Image (cartoon, one colour):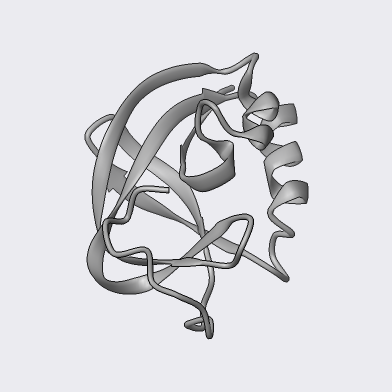
Length: 109
């Protein structure tokens, strides 16, 4: 069974944590509305907001989804919810509370 996941930041192509997605199929990219991105230094976080975030959408197996949960510290550091994307409903990881950190104005890490 596969699951759709919308990723941003260090999980995107060209970044270090993308290694977790090497066995997964990238099925598209999208700009998702209703989020604001913040820079936490070496990686970003998103919270619900009035902006948009650029994501890559992957079809992942159960084992990869479990590895992503561990990487993201789900559910204690990041939470996740399903969002609507151009490729269908996908999980996205987010913070509940706005961090005391710089905003990534263009939403593209």
